[in-house]
Image 1 (tube, rainbow, N blue to C red):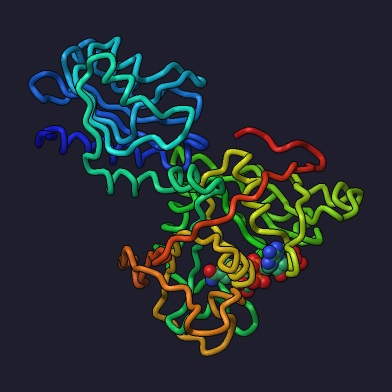
Image 2: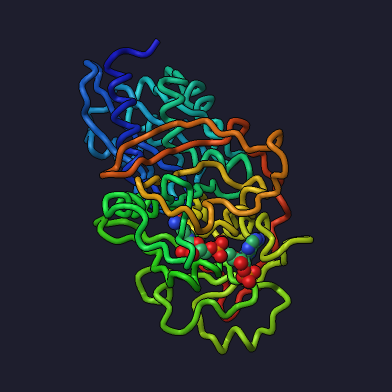
Length: 386
Ligand SMILES: NC(=O)c1ccc[n+]([C@@H]2O[C@H](COP(=O)([O-])OP(=O)(O)OC[C@H]3O[C@@H](n4cnc5c(N)ncnc54)[C@H](OP(=O)(O)O)[C@@H]3O)[C@@H](O)[C@H]2O)c1
């Protein structure tokens, strides 16, 4: 049975883990707090970057010897394997930790088993403290580990009558500066930001994070089936972040080299529909290490993601504005009758300046098919590790 000090430590560990959202992929976010034998906090840490020390190692270093006989409180089951760093179970044991309290079991075949190893070493282990809260903080990584594709958040900004642009397609700005600043936080927490060629043409978006110090920039992705929407001088081509343009695999390669637009991937077209095949796009992004996607595209691409069962969370910014005409937030999504409506559960409503931010998740979570990871012919360079 966890103590009150352990519960407080777990809350702190969850907060610490959240600091690195968007910065650790393909790894999870993890926080750790070390308590000494009296239950006093003697060390804190979180996993900051893939390839860097794990949360437990940071916290043990901070504890500087005061961990002996104490308790490690961790948001995720300590890892059992040697990846780019050594196994955390070993580090905890070597530091003399007598008890480990963790929230969520590690579902990955390579890293799981840490709890059993610790028990075998004589360490007292407890699982499940504040599990729901810790799971929510790591939802993108946990979801991606299960589904084999990134966790997708579809974000849109709309008027109270549900329009995302005016009749003339202008959409700047529907929502307030406060809401737009909040979107930069969402970008900073994401590994990739995705738009379609329609948004690229209409808005020439920048898609990088601004105004958040130390943010790891997301990969900017434009889904541009026929190539040509990302023209020289486009704002996504500046040096603020990496940019990937996704085109159909049957396009003329010479045409792409001529545009000179960032890194290109050539992927299959959607079967029987328009554009790029969404499961293939998501599988290729996952193979590149992307675990969370912020879909900022217009209604057409959002409709395609929805139809593919690839929207895990919806974040709508609703402004107290009426337009009366113009495109609706979501385009054709393969839903023809009310019985097939995609029902959502609202998980949060927050007032942001004059606007309302509503977060919702599918009432029945999408269980996506995991296609074979396509080889990603890249022109002119191969996909890079982040
Ligand atoms: N208020 C907001 O939150 C918000 C956000 C974004 C955009 N907008 C507004 O939305 C409007 C643009 O809307 P949009 O719907 O044209 O933009 P979009 O959804 O970003 O882009 C649509 C295009 O993406 C391409 N695409 C690639 N793969 C696809 C697939 N599997 N399924 C469907 N399309 C695919 C298609 O063109 P190709 O196949 O030819 O490449 C398609 O026409 C603009 O007025 C913009 O200002 C508003």
